[in-house]
Image (tube, rainbow, N blue to C red; front, side, top):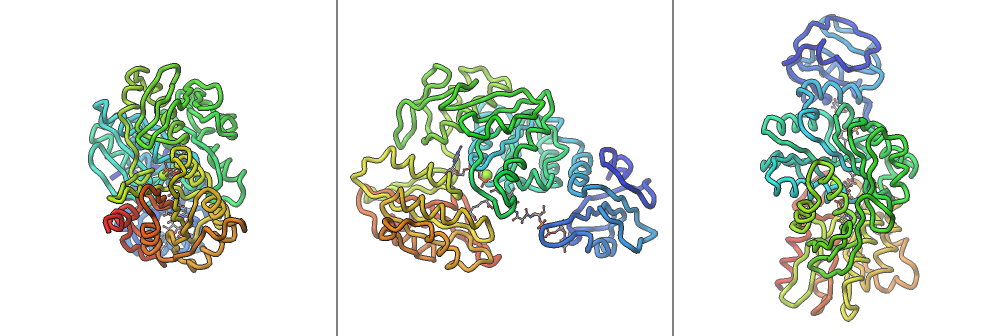
Length: 484
Ligand SMILES: CC(=O)N[C@H]1[C@@H](OP(=O)(O)OP(=O)(O)OC[C@H]2O[C@@H](n3ccc(=O)[nH]c3=O)[C@H](O)[C@@H]2O)O[C@H](CO)[C@@H](O)[C@@H]1O[C@H](C)C(=O)N[C@@H](C)C(=O)N[C@H](CCC(=O)O)C(=O)O
Ligand SMILES: Nc1ncnc2c1ncn2[C@@H]1O[C@H](COP(=O)(O)OP(=O)(O)OP(=O)(O)O)[C@@H](O)[C@H]1O
Ligand SMILES: N[C@H](CCC[C@H](N)C(=O)O)C(=O)O
Ligand SMILES: [Mg+2]
């Protein structure tokens, strides 16, 4: 329970109608979750306008309303707080309500198109291995020390973020690593958080359904760095063409990592195998258990963060060599018939290219690479033909299939993917809409030594069809078929 006056401390208020001397028991932005004593925040959403639910929230027990526009008829028993931006207000309120938890631990945010889950999870592992209690907010899960919680977003809403940060503080966590998605930044889910550091991975094609243009998407990511305080660090990938652009206006201490360009944390791959890579990092050799240029880059980011959080270089390198792959990211099983199946979360053109090129750089070409891939429904449509083109150009055989069609017609999605396949590659491709059947076909076609890549779903344990999430797990299914 907190005083309304205090909760509003950092909120930019346009007008206030009613008493501010109230005790608030809970905050909610969804009217369906309002109970007695709640402060309801009306947000303008992408589907509906939360202002339409103010009445309903009051009926359910809301005693105060934060909104951008005051309703035409006001309830005498309710306090209305008009603000410029409800999303921003919610983030500030949430932070205060939960005791400003981000200032009581060291919080590092990772942003970029690809690599966020990988870097945040590896940092969680590294600092846990060093003996610290650590928190993690990721696409795959939320972790507080060793307690695991389910999540539905890469960057949850600000109430959820602060709820878990508070839990982390109470449980004695020293660090928290979190993913910062572009949706999260635009919707101000991370406003009001005190970051000790930020990492930029890369910027390639994704989410143009939401951000409309590439530069809008890029500027969304940049806001995160613009808002970092001067005592924080901002670590960027100098190999990405937007790496330095991201930090143009940051007040934070600028640090760089890269495989190609001069950087504070500079790496080079000396040798690659399916089991790992030998890397040279700042003049020292280190064997790591992850593979691919993109993972070499991710590991440099991990190293940079570790060192800036006080870990000695030698210790950090030793820890780097102990890290293993993150669930759903280049996870592989080898069947009795020596067929290797790789499950990877590549769901953007760049990620798909990276993963296939990594496989191609290691394999001998005496074997076939069979790729099973699809694209999500109700998401960026323009990435579909690009992914079709990449898969068919770089693999020997491609089975296009469904990946969370959501509310779209799966065959329409598949047609859009196929539209990207160049004429000379059309013979290699086939459409099998049912993902289980597609994986089965790949296993039937594979002979000893062949490699099957199943891309797009990684750690996901469901297939989302018309809002119904039926159980589905690529790794489980392919492991089963490989036994047959
Ligand atoms: C497009 C998008 O990002 N939508 C997010 C947004 O919902 P919205 O703006 O559509 O909300 P809305 O349905 O229009 O409702 C507006 C307001 O009315 C309220 N409402 C609504 C109905 C009602 O009966 N009562 C009520 O009060 C809602 O609670 C909301 O405050 O705010 C919601 C609450 O925070 C999010 O759950 C929701 O995520 C949806 C489910 C989603 O799919 N988001 C994806 C695209 C996403 O955020 N992905 C990113 C990036 C992933 C990546 O990088 O790959 C992520 O961080 O997960
Ligand atoms: N640094 C990187 N650059 C390019 N591709 C990468 C990089 N790291 C990982 N990938 C590829 O992208 C896929 C997704 O990686 P990861 O889950 O770490 O990204 P993410 O940024 O968390 O994605 P999301 O936006 O879904 O949260 C991986 O399975 C791999 O194929
Ligand atoms: N966080 C990403 C994941 C996409 C994964 C893919 N399996 C899909 O469903 O499109 C998104 O929501 O766009
Ligand atoms: Mg992620």
